[in-house]
Length: 226
Image 1 (cartoon, rainbow, N blue to C red):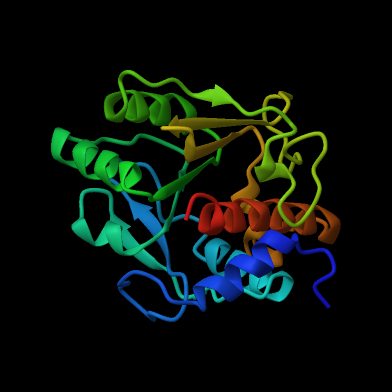
Image 2 (spheres, helix red, strand yellow):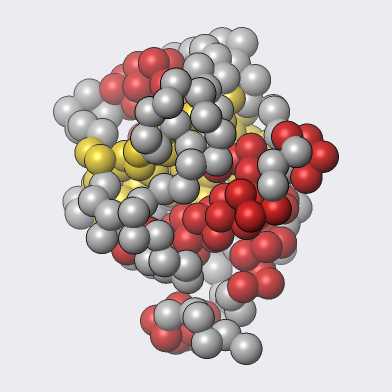
């Protein structure tokens, strides 16, 4: 049934017995957060995306993931209750020093942030991350990075879900002591491919690729370095 699942994931699932640090929801499953931020950017867009991804991932991998995500403010201490945080949108992100410090500490303590540029977020995200980690750089991940080969194989990196500027999709990361703590996808719109089919009317094959790559990201975040 799980022949396409890497053995180390199965070993991890059995080893932890689904026992995790204190969470805001069900302590027997991984819980996910969608990041709420100030500035006018539509952090709330595509509300079905993260739930659909979690449900798809649970069908592919024998790992307990709660599909009922929470919206969590970027400056809230509640963020520490979630091993995976998802941030998206089209526009401006505004953060103060307290919010930057909160997200920095979250990431330094093992949290994982996945950011998907839904077109128009790029310059604002880059300003945000440089404020959080002024001494770190976003590094483009090579195609042989494990995040592209968790459950599904993406030998050429990110799939292209939506066309905007005709640019190839790119995946960037922030590494903290060798651990990938932030993964940022640009010019792909994975999150749009996770939404309900009638939202963007993407072909089934395109949505499948988006969900498969999303599953790789989610499983990598929940297993690597934990």
